Structures are given as C-alpha cells and as structure tokens.
Length: 414
Ligand SMILES: Cc1cc2nc3c(=O)[nH]c(=O)nc-3n(C[C@H](O)[C@H](O)[C@H](O)COP(=O)(O)OP(=O)(O)OC[C@H]3O[C@@H](n4cnc5c(N)ncnc54)[C@H](O)[C@@H]3O)c2cc1C
Picture 1 (cartoon, helix red, strand yellow):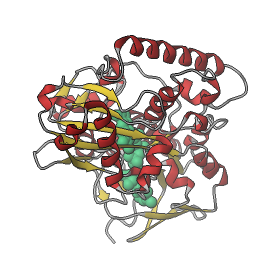
Picture 2 (cartoon, protein in one colour):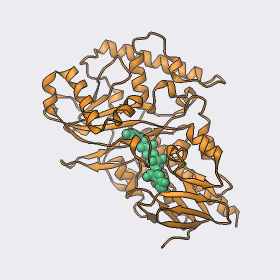
Picture 3 (spheres, rainbow, N blue to C red):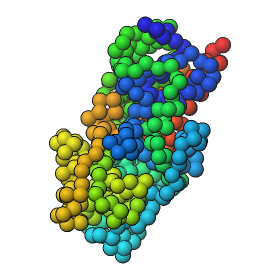
Picture 4 (cartoon, rainbow, N blue to C red):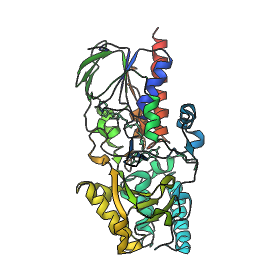
C-alpha cells in the first residue's frame, strides 16, 4: 500500500486533524492523514442545495472571530466573510414573546450565568441545573438555550466546564460555508479516505496503525477523532489506555441538529431574526429566519429532545418544526414550508454527536484527554481544549498544539 510507512500519522480529518497536518507539512515532516469518511471536515460539512445555496449541516459560526484562526484562512482563500450579528445577539421576533418578556428572560439568563461563575469557584463541581431558581417561569427556556450551547440538558452539564468556555462575542460566517473553508484548507495534505482506523498498536519500537485498508507503520500519531468515538473504543489501543478512555467518556458529545426548511414568501420576515417555538419548555427548537437573507429557515434542535427525535427519522424534525411554526403563525403557514436537508449527528458513526461537553465532575478530563502518551501518541480535537471546546477553532488550536508537540519531541530526540 502506498504511504504504508510514514513518520507521522494523523487520524481524523476534521478541523483539528487538518490544522495538525498542515502544520506538519509546513515543517516538512512526512505525514499522512487517515480519514474514515470520503471527505475532509468531519463535523464541519457544507452541502449545496437544489437552489445552489451552501448549507452548513455542522458548524456555521466562526465564534470568537476576532481571535479565530479560521478567519485568517478565509481571508487567504478570498472567501466572502459575513459579519452580520447573529440572531441570538438581537431581539427575537415578538410573536408569542413580547419584548418586555424577552428583556425579563435576558435578565434571568444573565443572573443564571452570574451564579454559574460563582459556583464554578467552589471545589466541588455540580450540574448546571442546580443553579436554576426553583419555580422560575424561564427555567424551561434557559434549559433549551443551554442545550443549543452545550448539546446536553443542564442536569448533564458540568458548571466548571460551562464557566471555562471563553467567547469574545464576535461571530462571523462565510458564504461558501465553514465546512468548505476547512476542507479546502486540507486539500493538499497527503490523505487516505474511506479508511477508518481500527487500532493503534504501540508495543513495538514503531507504531502500527490498523486501518480498513491495511496496516501503516509510523513513529508518531496524532489522534484527532471525536471524544465519543474514543470512548466507544472504535479505535482500540494496544496496550489499552484506560485513563484516556475514561477521560473521553467524561466528555461525551452532546447533540445539536439543524434542519433547513424552504420558506415561501420569506420576504415578509426580517433577515437573520430568530423565534423560539415555545418559551415555556426545554423541548423546543430555535428558528433562524432568512440566514444570509435566503428564503429559508434554519431550525436548531438540541439535547435529549433532539436525541429522541433522531430515533424517529428526519421527518420527525420537519413535522415538529411545522407544528411549532403553525402554533406561532397559524395553520396556513404549513403550506409555505418544505424540508431541504438535515443530518442526524448522533447517529453518525464517525461523530456520535455534535459537540463535547463535560459531565458534572469531569471538567478536568479535557486536560487528561489532551496529554501525550510516551511522546509517541498525541491527542487533538475540540474536546481537548480547556476553553474553546465544542468549536471548530478549538479544534484548530488543539491540532496545532499536538503538531507542535510532535515537532518538539522529534527535534529533542535528534
Ligand atoms: C449541528 C452542529 C452545529 C455546530 N455549530 C458550530 C458553530 O456554529 N461554530 C463552531 O465553531 N462549532 C460548531 N459546531 C462544532 C464543530 O463542528 C466541531 O467542534 C468541530 O468541527 C470539531 O472538529 P474536530 O476536528 O475536533 O472533530 P471532527 O470534525 O469530528 O473530526 C474528527 C474526524 O475524525 C474522523 N474519524 C472518526 N472516527 C475515525 C476513525 N476510526 N478513523 C479515521 N477517522 C475517523 C471523522 O470522520 C472526522 O472527520 C457544530 C457542530 C454541529 C454538529
């Protein structure tokens, strides 16, 4: 098999793996990226619909854009950057949610995050749900928004982890799609596709990476697969690495799914405005009207509620969205809606979810997951980031950090 003996193997071609491989290539290191899918990008995935619109089925927002390295890549690639402020930073539509109530909700959310900050200083970690005020009318919606942020309901979310997440509040998008941006960045990296890695044997002097297309030997490996894939032991280590697998299990991938829905007569609505299906419950979707001004709605489902819908098929998401939108805009509204595209990330065997969160008591697992083993096995991926986890730029930072560790250990061994 060509490339069956290389210096460094990178397992996984998402944001982290691509950033790592680019760094290694720039240092003239003989490396090979091995990807299970037929494409790069992983959870960054842009598809094109019948009308020619680019749809990001995974990440879409370049969060913390003023320090997000993908922004520089976008500039280098000459793609159009959209700096319109995101729907969550502007008032929602008032239907079913008058402005006075929105203000009250925002104040309650701010108080919740202030309690989170204080509680995170305590020695003992706890679940974020313990910080809800018993009986507060906004608890359902706070939980819903919590699932959009973390992918899990608040009772499964570590307060310390939630508090460690850093966001500058600057958010951009790219018209060509975040997925396209990331996969184009890796376009010239030596890579093998449709090639799941099944095991890494680190008993011998050299590493043996078992793949669906045969074995590859290497001196070092950067493992950049999702934490949930590691926890499920779809990549088996010999000898086993129980501390690593335990750390990965403490950082499961929460769930967030988007469905894009065509909207007839969309001009009636303001661009980039959001509405919640309901304001009194955790199981509700957020509807982003006219993203990029396009005649569609991007509906966002997350947490246990989305996991339940996944078991009923893609139609269940559309049917649910129609029921909520009809509740808000009247029964005629259903005729204006047509499903375009979605992806169920929880059922995707190479993701097993959308973005990592730490379970209560497991926030420090991120550091454990990121630690190299024996200066030969290195780890990357958004789940390894202490403060930029769950994002594509977090993936970048961990990929580059792992590549730099490889370069440093290689140089010191000479
Ligand atoms: C619906 C949704 C919305 C999101 N929104 C945003 C957003 O707006 N902004 C943002 O920054 N982030 C967002 N995210 C999160 C973001 O997409 C991820 O955090 C980021 O892309 C993760 O990059 P990664 O390289 O760590 O992992 P991945 O992208 O998952 O890459 C891992 C790679 O490993 C491969 N792989 C898995 N198993 C194997 C194996 N056995 N052998 C070989 N290869 C394997 C996978 O196929 C994949 O390509 C969103 C995610 C989803 C799903």
